[in-house]
Image (cartoon, rainbow, N blue to C red):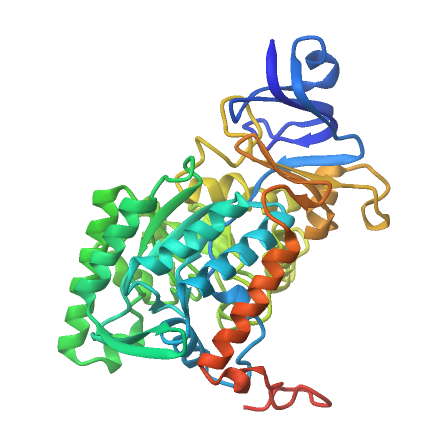
Length: 479
Protein backbone atom coordinates (compact mmCIF):
# COMPACT_ATOMS: atom_id res chain seq x y z
CA UNK A 1 0.00 0.00 0.00
CA UNK A 2 1.31 3.45 -0.91
CA UNK A 3 1.30 5.96 1.95
CA UNK A 4 2.61 9.45 2.58
CA UNK A 5 4.87 8.96 5.60
CA UNK A 6 6.35 6.28 7.83
CA UNK A 7 8.20 7.05 11.07
CA UNK A 8 10.16 4.05 12.33
CA UNK A 9 12.83 2.97 14.78
CA UNK A 10 11.84 5.11 17.77
CA UNK A 11 10.28 4.42 21.13
CA UNK A 12 6.58 5.28 20.82
CA UNK A 13 4.80 6.50 23.94
CA UNK A 14 1.30 6.12 22.56
CA UNK A 15 -0.95 7.39 25.40
CA UNK A 16 -3.57 5.06 23.90
CA UNK A 17 -6.11 3.21 26.06
CA UNK A 18 -3.50 0.59 26.98
CA UNK A 19 -0.77 3.22 27.47
CA UNK A 20 1.51 1.12 25.25
CA UNK A 21 5.20 1.95 24.98
CA UNK A 22 6.49 0.38 21.76
CA UNK A 23 10.25 0.02 21.35
CA UNK A 24 11.52 0.05 17.76
CA UNK A 25 8.05 1.18 16.80
CA UNK A 26 6.64 2.54 13.57
CA UNK A 27 3.79 4.89 12.70
CA UNK A 28 2.15 4.93 9.27
CA UNK A 29 0.50 8.18 8.16
CA UNK A 30 -1.72 8.82 5.16
CA UNK A 31 -4.05 11.72 4.34
CA UNK A 32 -3.07 13.37 7.60
CA UNK A 33 -4.19 10.45 9.76
CA UNK A 34 -2.49 7.59 11.57
CA UNK A 35 -3.39 4.34 9.84
CA UNK A 36 -1.06 1.91 11.65
CA UNK A 37 1.02 1.79 14.86
CA UNK A 38 3.16 -1.29 15.54
CA UNK A 39 6.65 -2.72 15.71
CA UNK A 40 8.87 -1.62 12.84
CA UNK A 41 9.35 -5.24 11.77
CA UNK A 42 5.59 -5.68 11.47
CA UNK A 43 5.14 -2.49 9.46
CA UNK A 44 8.11 -2.57 7.11
CA UNK A 45 6.82 -4.97 4.44
CA UNK A 46 3.22 -3.74 4.34
CA UNK A 47 3.60 -0.16 3.15
CA UNK A 48 5.50 1.88 0.59
CA UNK A 49 6.06 5.46 1.82
CA UNK A 50 6.76 8.62 -0.16
CA UNK A 51 8.76 9.86 2.83
CA UNK A 52 10.36 8.03 5.73
CA UNK A 53 11.76 9.34 9.00
CA UNK A 54 14.34 7.33 10.91
CA UNK A 55 13.46 7.88 14.57
CA UNK A 56 16.19 5.74 16.10
CA UNK A 57 17.53 7.40 19.23
CA UNK A 58 14.29 9.32 19.67
CA UNK A 59 11.15 9.10 21.78
CA UNK A 60 7.90 9.64 19.90
CA UNK A 61 5.03 11.25 21.81
CA UNK A 62 1.70 12.81 20.88
CA UNK A 63 1.81 16.52 20.17
CA UNK A 64 1.74 18.51 23.40
CA UNK A 65 -1.30 20.68 24.14
CA UNK A 66 -1.30 23.97 26.05
CA UNK A 67 -4.81 24.58 27.39
CA UNK A 68 -4.37 28.15 28.59
CA UNK A 69 -2.26 31.02 27.24
CA UNK A 70 -2.61 34.61 26.07
CA UNK A 71 -2.05 36.07 22.62
CA UNK A 72 0.03 39.22 22.82
CA UNK A 73 2.32 37.98 25.58
CA UNK A 74 5.15 36.89 23.29
CA UNK A 75 6.04 40.51 22.53
CA UNK A 76 5.84 41.74 26.12
CA UNK A 77 7.51 38.91 28.02
CA UNK A 78 9.32 40.32 31.11
CA UNK A 79 7.98 43.83 30.44
CA UNK A 80 6.13 45.78 33.08
CA UNK A 81 7.45 44.03 36.17
CA UNK A 82 7.75 47.45 37.76
CA UNK A 83 4.12 48.36 37.01
CA UNK A 84 0.57 47.14 37.49
CA UNK A 85 0.13 44.19 35.13
CA UNK A 86 -3.47 44.98 34.22
CA UNK A 87 -2.45 48.54 33.40
CA UNK A 88 0.38 47.32 31.18
CA UNK A 89 -1.91 44.97 29.24
CA UNK A 90 -4.59 47.58 28.86
CA UNK A 91 -2.12 50.20 27.68
CA UNK A 92 -0.54 47.91 25.11
CA UNK A 93 -3.34 45.64 23.92
CA UNK A 94 -6.34 47.99 23.85
CA UNK A 95 -4.56 51.19 22.92
CA UNK A 96 -1.08 50.47 21.58
CA UNK A 97 -1.50 47.45 19.32
CA UNK A 98 -2.13 47.19 15.58
CA UNK A 99 -3.04 44.27 13.32
CA UNK A 100 0.66 44.08 12.42
CA UNK A 101 1.48 43.69 16.13
CA UNK A 102 -0.94 40.78 16.49
CA UNK A 103 0.34 39.10 13.31
CA UNK A 104 3.99 39.35 14.34
CA UNK A 105 3.22 38.20 17.88
CA UNK A 106 1.19 35.22 16.67
CA UNK A 107 4.02 34.06 14.45
CA UNK A 108 6.56 34.39 17.23
CA UNK A 109 4.38 32.62 19.80
CA UNK A 110 3.45 29.86 17.36
CA UNK A 111 7.06 29.35 16.37
CA UNK A 112 8.04 29.03 20.04
CA UNK A 113 5.28 26.49 20.56
CA UNK A 114 6.28 24.58 17.45
CA UNK A 115 9.95 24.34 18.39
CA UNK A 116 8.93 23.07 21.84
CA UNK A 117 6.62 20.37 20.46
CA UNK A 118 3.34 22.13 21.31
CA UNK A 119 1.09 21.26 18.39
CA UNK A 120 -2.14 22.72 19.83
CA UNK A 121 -2.69 25.68 22.12
CA UNK A 122 -5.44 27.87 23.51
CA UNK A 123 -4.77 31.60 23.16
CA UNK A 124 -6.96 34.30 24.68
CA UNK A 125 -6.90 37.32 22.39
CA UNK A 126 -5.50 39.59 25.07
CA UNK A 127 -4.11 39.72 28.59
CA UNK A 128 -5.28 39.87 32.13
CA UNK A 129 -8.72 38.35 32.50
CA UNK A 130 -10.67 41.19 30.87
CA UNK A 131 -8.48 42.87 28.23
CA UNK A 132 -9.60 41.38 24.94
CA UNK A 133 -8.93 42.91 21.52
CA UNK A 134 -12.45 42.42 20.20
CA UNK A 135 -13.36 45.92 19.08
CA UNK A 136 -12.78 44.96 15.43
CA UNK A 137 -12.27 41.59 13.66
CA UNK A 138 -9.04 42.78 12.01
CA UNK A 139 -7.03 41.97 15.14
CA UNK A 140 -8.24 38.38 15.36
CA UNK A 141 -7.81 38.04 11.60
CA UNK A 142 -4.18 39.11 11.92
CA UNK A 143 -3.59 36.74 14.82
CA UNK A 144 -5.15 33.74 13.07
CA UNK A 145 -3.27 34.47 9.84
CA UNK A 146 -0.04 34.56 11.82
CA UNK A 147 -0.73 31.20 13.48
CA UNK A 148 -1.78 29.66 10.17
CA UNK A 149 1.49 30.68 8.54
CA UNK A 150 3.48 28.62 11.07
CA UNK A 151 1.15 25.61 10.91
CA UNK A 152 0.24 24.88 14.54
CA UNK A 153 -3.26 24.28 15.80
CA UNK A 154 -4.83 27.03 17.87
CA UNK A 155 -8.05 27.61 19.76
CA UNK A 156 -8.47 31.39 19.91
CA UNK A 157 -10.68 32.65 22.73
CA UNK A 158 -12.62 35.83 22.05
CA UNK A 159 -15.29 37.68 23.96
CA UNK A 160 -16.24 40.96 25.60
CA UNK A 161 -14.52 42.74 28.44
CA UNK A 162 -16.16 42.69 31.84
CA UNK A 163 -18.94 45.19 32.49
CA UNK A 164 -19.31 48.15 32.81
CA UNK A 165 -19.10 49.40 29.24
CA UNK A 166 -18.06 51.19 27.16
CA UNK A 167 -14.27 50.93 27.35
CA UNK A 168 -11.92 53.05 25.29
CA UNK A 169 -9.90 51.39 22.53
CA UNK A 170 -7.54 52.92 20.00
CA UNK A 171 -6.50 52.26 16.42
CA UNK A 172 -3.49 53.67 14.60
CA UNK A 173 -2.90 55.14 11.16
CA UNK A 174 0.87 55.44 11.09
CA UNK A 175 1.51 57.80 14.03
CA UNK A 176 -2.06 59.04 14.33
CA UNK A 177 -4.15 57.55 17.12
CA UNK A 178 -7.92 57.37 17.06
CA UNK A 179 -9.60 56.65 20.42
CA UNK A 180 -13.18 55.41 20.55
CA UNK A 181 -15.61 53.78 23.00
CA UNK A 182 -16.54 50.14 22.52
CA UNK A 183 -19.79 48.65 23.80
CA UNK A 184 -20.64 45.09 24.79
CA UNK A 185 -22.88 44.81 21.72
CA UNK A 186 -20.01 45.84 19.47
CA UNK A 187 -17.74 43.19 20.96
CA UNK A 188 -20.36 40.46 20.58
CA UNK A 189 -20.85 41.37 16.91
CA UNK A 190 -17.09 41.28 16.44
CA UNK A 191 -16.95 37.83 18.01
CA UNK A 192 -19.71 36.57 15.74
CA UNK A 193 -17.72 37.71 12.70
CA UNK A 194 -14.56 36.05 14.04
CA UNK A 195 -16.44 32.78 14.54
CA UNK A 196 -17.78 32.92 10.98
CA UNK A 197 -14.37 33.73 9.54
CA UNK A 198 -12.18 31.33 11.49
CA UNK A 199 -13.88 28.54 13.41
CA UNK A 200 -12.60 25.21 12.09
CA UNK A 201 -10.70 27.04 9.37
CA UNK A 202 -7.22 26.41 7.90
CA UNK A 203 -7.85 22.70 7.43
CA UNK A 204 -9.51 22.75 10.88
CA UNK A 205 -6.29 23.89 12.56
CA UNK A 206 -7.86 27.14 13.76
CA UNK A 207 -10.89 27.03 16.03
CA UNK A 208 -12.58 29.67 18.16
CA UNK A 209 -13.66 29.60 21.81
CA UNK A 210 -15.88 32.07 23.63
CA UNK A 211 -14.87 33.79 26.86
CA UNK A 212 -16.45 36.06 29.42
CA UNK A 213 -14.35 37.34 32.34
CA UNK A 214 -14.78 35.60 35.69
CA UNK A 215 -17.03 37.23 38.25
CA UNK A 216 -15.21 36.82 41.54
CA UNK A 217 -16.11 37.83 45.08
CA UNK A 218 -14.47 41.23 44.71
CA UNK A 219 -16.61 42.06 41.70
CA UNK A 220 -19.85 41.36 43.51
CA UNK A 221 -18.57 43.43 46.42
CA UNK A 222 -17.04 46.38 44.54
CA UNK A 223 -19.28 46.77 41.48
CA UNK A 224 -22.54 48.65 41.70
CA UNK A 225 -25.59 46.42 41.83
CA UNK A 226 -26.56 47.61 38.34
CA UNK A 227 -23.15 46.86 36.87
CA UNK A 228 -22.99 43.46 38.55
CA UNK A 229 -26.39 42.44 37.21
CA UNK A 230 -25.34 43.67 33.78
CA UNK A 231 -22.19 41.55 33.97
CA UNK A 232 -24.30 38.48 34.75
CA UNK A 233 -26.55 39.26 31.79
CA UNK A 234 -23.53 39.62 29.51
CA UNK A 235 -21.99 36.37 30.76
CA UNK A 236 -25.21 34.51 29.92
CA UNK A 237 -25.35 36.03 26.43
CA UNK A 238 -21.73 35.04 25.78
CA UNK A 239 -22.39 31.52 27.08
CA UNK A 240 -25.43 31.23 24.82
CA UNK A 241 -23.24 32.29 21.91
CA UNK A 242 -20.78 29.50 22.69
CA UNK A 243 -23.55 26.90 22.80
CA UNK A 244 -25.20 28.08 19.62
CA UNK A 245 -21.91 27.99 17.71
CA UNK A 246 -20.70 24.74 19.29
CA UNK A 247 -17.68 26.39 20.93
CA UNK A 248 -15.69 25.70 24.06
CA UNK A 249 -16.51 28.32 26.70
CA UNK A 250 -13.53 29.35 28.80
CA UNK A 251 -12.85 31.69 31.69
CA UNK A 252 -9.55 32.97 33.04
CA UNK A 253 -8.80 33.44 36.72
CA UNK A 254 -11.16 31.30 38.77
CA UNK A 255 -10.58 31.15 42.50
CA UNK A 256 -12.57 30.27 45.61
CA UNK A 257 -16.21 31.28 45.26
CA UNK A 258 -16.18 32.06 41.55
CA UNK A 259 -16.85 28.49 40.40
CA UNK A 260 -20.00 28.32 42.52
CA UNK A 261 -21.06 31.70 41.13
CA UNK A 262 -20.52 30.54 37.53
CA UNK A 263 -22.55 27.42 38.29
CA UNK A 264 -25.43 29.47 39.66
CA UNK A 265 -25.34 31.70 36.58
CA UNK A 266 -25.49 28.61 34.36
CA UNK A 267 -22.07 28.78 32.73
CA UNK A 268 -20.64 25.33 33.50
CA UNK A 269 -20.71 22.00 31.67
CA UNK A 270 -18.51 19.59 29.70
CA UNK A 271 -17.85 22.32 27.14
CA UNK A 272 -16.61 24.74 29.83
CA UNK A 273 -12.91 25.13 30.56
CA UNK A 274 -11.96 27.08 33.70
CA UNK A 275 -8.39 28.27 34.16
CA UNK A 276 -6.39 28.48 37.41
CA UNK A 277 -9.22 27.31 39.72
CA UNK A 278 -7.32 27.99 42.93
CA UNK A 279 -8.59 27.70 46.48
CA UNK A 280 -11.76 25.86 45.52
CA UNK A 281 -14.08 24.71 48.27
CA UNK A 282 -15.17 21.08 48.62
CA UNK A 283 -18.56 22.19 47.27
CA UNK A 284 -16.94 23.70 44.18
CA UNK A 285 -14.95 20.53 43.52
CA UNK A 286 -18.23 18.60 43.64
CA UNK A 287 -19.79 21.16 41.27
CA UNK A 288 -17.00 20.61 38.74
CA UNK A 289 -17.50 16.85 38.98
CA UNK A 290 -21.30 17.05 38.75
CA UNK A 291 -21.25 19.33 35.71
CA UNK A 292 -18.27 17.59 34.05
CA UNK A 293 -16.57 20.98 33.81
CA UNK A 294 -12.90 20.89 32.76
CA UNK A 295 -9.98 22.67 34.44
CA UNK A 296 -6.87 24.27 32.90
CA UNK A 297 -4.25 24.15 35.65
CA UNK A 298 -1.30 26.54 35.33
CA UNK A 299 1.35 25.40 37.84
CA UNK A 300 3.94 27.96 36.69
CA UNK A 301 1.60 30.96 36.89
CA UNK A 302 1.55 33.73 39.47
CA UNK A 303 -1.96 32.59 40.42
CA UNK A 304 -0.48 29.25 41.51
CA UNK A 305 1.74 31.14 43.98
CA UNK A 306 -1.14 33.02 45.58
CA UNK A 307 -3.50 30.07 45.67
CA UNK A 308 -3.46 26.28 45.35
CA UNK A 309 -5.36 24.43 42.65
CA UNK A 310 -6.68 21.18 44.20
CA UNK A 311 -5.74 19.08 41.20
CA UNK A 312 -5.49 15.79 43.05
CA UNK A 313 -8.91 16.19 44.69
CA UNK A 314 -10.47 17.27 41.40
CA UNK A 315 -9.07 14.29 39.48
CA UNK A 316 -10.04 11.86 42.23
CA UNK A 317 -13.62 13.10 41.74
CA UNK A 318 -13.34 12.38 38.02
CA UNK A 319 -12.75 15.94 36.80
CA UNK A 320 -10.61 16.33 33.69
CA UNK A 321 -7.64 18.57 34.56
CA UNK A 322 -5.13 19.63 31.91
CA UNK A 323 -2.00 21.79 31.97
CA UNK A 324 -1.62 25.33 30.66
CA UNK A 325 1.41 27.59 30.42
CA UNK A 326 -0.49 30.86 31.06
CA UNK A 327 1.68 32.14 28.16
CA UNK A 328 5.17 33.61 28.24
CA UNK A 329 4.66 36.89 30.10
CA UNK A 330 5.91 38.00 32.44
CA UNK A 331 8.40 35.24 33.31
CA UNK A 332 7.50 31.90 31.73
CA UNK A 333 7.74 30.07 28.42
CA UNK A 334 5.67 27.85 26.15
CA UNK A 335 7.84 24.85 27.05
CA UNK A 336 5.32 22.26 28.25
CA UNK A 337 8.12 19.97 29.45
CA UNK A 338 9.00 22.73 31.89
CA UNK A 339 5.39 23.00 33.01
CA UNK A 340 5.01 19.22 33.44
CA UNK A 341 8.05 19.22 35.70
CA UNK A 342 6.73 22.23 37.61
CA UNK A 343 3.41 20.43 37.96
CA UNK A 344 4.99 17.39 39.60
CA UNK A 345 7.10 19.38 42.05
CA UNK A 346 4.29 21.84 42.84
CA UNK A 347 1.93 19.14 44.07
CA UNK A 348 4.58 16.96 45.71
CA UNK A 349 5.76 19.97 47.69
CA UNK A 350 2.20 20.83 48.68
CA UNK A 351 1.59 17.34 50.05
CA UNK A 352 5.19 16.72 51.19
CA UNK A 353 4.82 13.43 49.33
CA UNK A 354 7.09 12.34 46.46
CA UNK A 355 4.55 9.76 45.28
CA UNK A 356 2.06 12.44 44.25
CA UNK A 357 1.63 13.26 40.54
CA UNK A 358 3.44 10.48 38.65
CA UNK A 359 5.30 11.48 35.51
CA UNK A 360 2.92 9.46 33.34
CA UNK A 361 -0.07 11.40 34.66
CA UNK A 362 1.73 14.66 33.94
CA UNK A 363 2.19 13.59 30.32
CA UNK A 364 -1.47 12.57 30.09
CA UNK A 365 -2.45 16.04 31.33
CA UNK A 366 -0.47 17.62 28.48
CA UNK A 367 -1.83 15.24 25.82
CA UNK A 368 -5.00 13.14 26.05
CA UNK A 369 -6.50 14.96 29.07
CA UNK A 370 -5.84 18.29 27.37
CA UNK A 371 -7.45 17.05 24.16
CA UNK A 372 -10.48 15.94 26.18
CA UNK A 373 -10.68 19.34 27.88
CA UNK A 374 -10.83 20.96 24.43
CA UNK A 375 -13.39 18.49 23.10
CA UNK A 376 -10.84 17.14 20.63
CA UNK A 377 -9.95 13.75 22.11
CA UNK A 378 -11.45 11.93 19.14
CA UNK A 379 -8.95 13.75 16.90
CA UNK A 380 -5.70 14.34 18.82
CA UNK A 381 -3.98 13.63 22.15
CA UNK A 382 -2.69 10.11 21.51
CA UNK A 383 -0.93 8.06 18.88
CA UNK A 384 -3.48 5.56 17.64
CA UNK A 385 -5.17 4.52 14.45
CA UNK A 386 -7.82 6.94 13.19
CA UNK A 387 -6.48 10.04 14.91
CA UNK A 388 -4.84 13.00 13.26
CA UNK A 389 -1.10 12.64 12.98
CA UNK A 390 0.05 15.22 15.55
CA UNK A 391 3.37 13.72 16.59
CA UNK A 392 6.59 14.92 18.25
CA UNK A 393 10.03 13.31 18.10
CA UNK A 394 12.24 14.03 21.11
CA UNK A 395 15.98 13.52 20.69
CA UNK A 396 17.56 11.30 23.36
CA UNK A 397 21.09 11.89 22.05
CA UNK A 398 22.16 14.22 24.86
CA UNK A 399 23.89 13.76 28.22
CA UNK A 400 20.80 14.71 30.24
CA UNK A 401 18.70 12.15 28.35
CA UNK A 402 21.10 9.20 28.56
CA UNK A 403 21.28 6.32 29.19
CA UNK A 404 18.41 5.50 26.85
CA UNK A 405 16.04 3.50 29.01
CA UNK A 406 12.77 4.11 30.89
CA UNK A 407 11.91 6.43 28.03
CA UNK A 408 8.35 7.26 29.10
CA UNK A 409 9.67 8.45 32.46
CA UNK A 410 12.71 10.21 31.10
CA UNK A 411 10.96 12.26 28.43
CA UNK A 412 8.77 13.87 31.11
CA UNK A 413 11.30 14.31 33.90
CA UNK A 414 14.45 15.21 31.97
CA UNK A 415 13.57 16.61 28.54
CA UNK A 416 13.07 20.26 27.72
CA UNK A 417 11.62 21.93 24.67
CA UNK A 418 15.00 22.28 23.02
CA UNK A 419 15.21 18.48 22.76
CA UNK A 420 12.36 18.45 20.23
CA UNK A 421 13.73 17.40 16.84
CA UNK A 422 10.71 16.87 14.60
CA UNK A 423 7.05 17.93 14.75
CA UNK A 424 4.28 16.61 12.55
CA UNK A 425 0.82 18.22 12.55
CA UNK A 426 -1.99 16.65 10.58
CA UNK A 427 0.57 14.50 8.77
CA UNK A 428 2.59 17.53 7.66
CA UNK A 429 6.20 17.79 8.80
CA UNK A 430 6.30 21.36 10.13
CA UNK A 431 9.57 21.04 12.08
CA UNK A 432 12.40 18.84 10.82
CA UNK A 433 15.85 18.60 12.35
CA UNK A 434 14.78 21.48 14.64
CA UNK A 435 14.03 23.75 11.65
CA UNK A 436 10.52 24.96 10.75
CA UNK A 437 9.43 24.11 7.24
CA UNK A 438 6.85 26.87 6.64
CA UNK A 439 8.60 30.00 7.89
CA UNK A 440 12.09 31.42 8.17
CA UNK A 441 13.12 31.94 11.77
CA UNK A 442 15.06 35.14 11.09
CA UNK A 443 12.07 36.74 9.39
CA UNK A 444 9.77 35.92 12.30
CA UNK A 445 12.27 37.23 14.86
CA UNK A 446 13.05 40.40 12.93
CA UNK A 447 9.37 41.16 12.41
CA UNK A 448 8.65 40.59 16.09
CA UNK A 449 11.48 42.91 17.10
CA UNK A 450 10.33 45.62 14.70
CA UNK A 451 6.70 45.51 15.82
CA UNK A 452 7.74 45.57 19.47
CA UNK A 453 9.81 48.71 18.89
CA UNK A 454 6.84 50.35 17.16
CA UNK A 455 4.53 49.39 20.02
CA UNK A 456 6.95 50.81 22.59
CA UNK A 457 7.09 54.06 20.63
CA UNK A 458 3.28 54.31 20.43
CA UNK A 459 2.80 53.68 24.15
CA UNK A 460 5.83 55.54 25.49
CA UNK A 461 6.72 52.05 26.70
CA UNK A 462 10.34 52.62 27.72
CA UNK A 463 9.08 52.61 31.31
CA UNK A 464 8.04 48.98 30.87
CA UNK A 465 11.65 47.97 30.16
CA UNK A 466 13.08 49.12 33.47
CA UNK A 467 14.32 46.45 35.85
CA UNK A 468 12.04 46.29 38.89
CA UNK A 469 13.18 47.65 42.22
CA UNK A 470 14.93 44.95 44.23
CA UNK A 471 16.17 43.10 41.12
CA UNK A 472 19.77 43.17 42.43
CA UNK A 473 21.18 42.46 45.88
CA UNK A 474 17.84 41.93 47.57
CA UNK A 475 15.82 38.98 48.82
CA UNK A 476 12.54 40.50 47.58
CA UNK A 477 11.31 42.71 44.81
CA UNK A 478 10.34 46.06 46.28
CA UNK A 479 6.75 47.08 45.78
